[in-house]
Image (cartoon, rainbow, N blue to C red):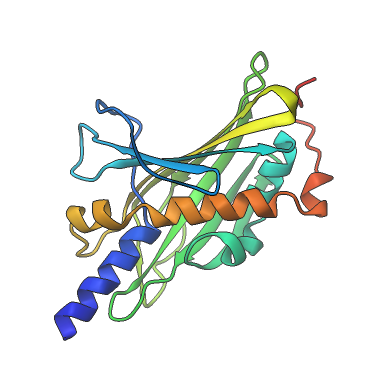
Length: 220
């Protein structure tokens, strides 16, 4: 019974910490499509864990999505299995350092990570990218948590016609501890799917729809 509980806990943790890399050889394979969100995975050439990508389209502004992504205090309400999220340092409007925890069921320890987040926009295509790079030594290890030391995430926001934005979410996470790669691969679809579905709903709230950033140019 104890082994079974730990196995189920590892499955849930793996779904929270979906994994990807940006140095890849494999082709994308559609694993789930519901509620207008597609989740893909593919083999990567440097890891046993597969890359995942979640894609959806939203009729909204680029600034509204970035404002929601930067509104870290709300993450526990819409990011899958997020326990705590806070700003450690705001460098400027386009960059900050953030802390986040991932809730894991007993008996698996929760995870946490620290990331440096930067937003850039291509002046020609108007494509906005938000990069999250792991900086695990920025603060001391928090008791009761396993510090994630490998975490790289990327949101790519591509303007389309008729006010639509194509939202693509990729991430590279090694959850650490004793989570086997096959468990991560088996259970890692739910996290990106739920987070992307929730983002699409949340970004339509009035406070985000009014967002404007001086460093983001909206398509005409």
